[in-house]
Length: 431
Image (tube, rainbow, N blue to C red; front, side):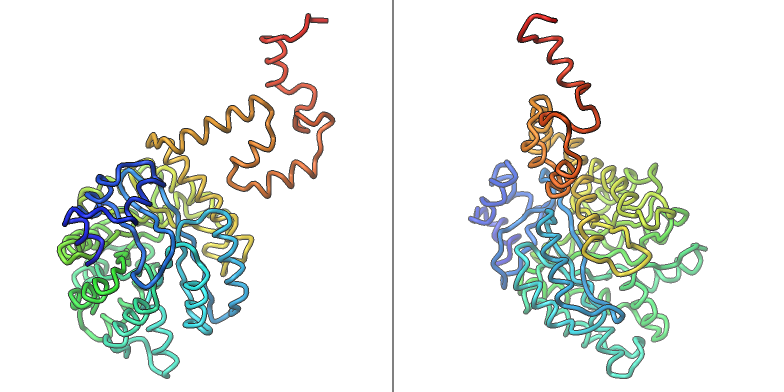
């Protein structure tokens, strides 16, 4: 039985109890939420890792992407990125490799990652097609489903599948007049296949086949947004909503089949439309966990897109998004290095925490209370430990030692906290 089917029978598993305890919620409620499809635990039956929950009433989680390209191939580099993203608190990792020894890299990540692992199988299907000296338009749908099953057998916990990109949606896209038609790599590959073959998207046309594979391994489907806006000018348009309507229907089909599912969202969205996008998704997809790719709130943040995404991610999370995909400073420029991964993870963790504060999550509120009290006490070890990048904070403090150990080198003897403490609660008569 899958997790959904087990939950429907009213059975509370040790896994559910583990997640509920970590989140500080009731195990019976979490089980009911799994049955209703508003929360998920994305762990394959073929992996043994500490389970993590995503969804209603749970802490906002973050995902970090790594992977090779044809221009940069190094399993050791990706191992270092994996270790870094785990160290700085990513809740999941996705392998987006499009070049090199993809199978070997995926196996390394599955073997070494103590967190859920996701993939986008159409990338590997496209790579294999090109390596066979054929164009992507000649890709056989059976080969695509074969790659999906191969990933499931290997223990991949969740896969992104652009199953909502239909011929009808393509026609709407043509008439939409978008500035950037499709920026989703998986979506673009499927669109090319559909247009050149004049056939329906196999992931839509054979969705039952997809559900059967996912059910067999209790693998979570992340229903991808192939028509996500690639610039703020295209945000929340008819093409985006056309696909979302289809994903809402597919969410219902997956739930009926006992398959866990989450919905992927935009994309480039101006700040004033972020909350609107979350409310629309939650309504159309009946509360399914929402996995947002940013959102990036401006198109002009190149080199700093971890910041544009963190701004959008905080607003999205506060509005109800459940899962944030990090964006690195290298977005739109190049394949990220280990430093970019670190910056992206920390920025996304801050966004998720800010969202959890807005949601009133007790764990998030308690962390900030502890930080405030550590600052009042001038407890530097406490402040360092509660920060999102303790290594950086400790290194910066050591690099700029203050004249007095209990203060910082910015304020020194004029430290506001110490001055007020001395004035309001003097321990000795004023001089």
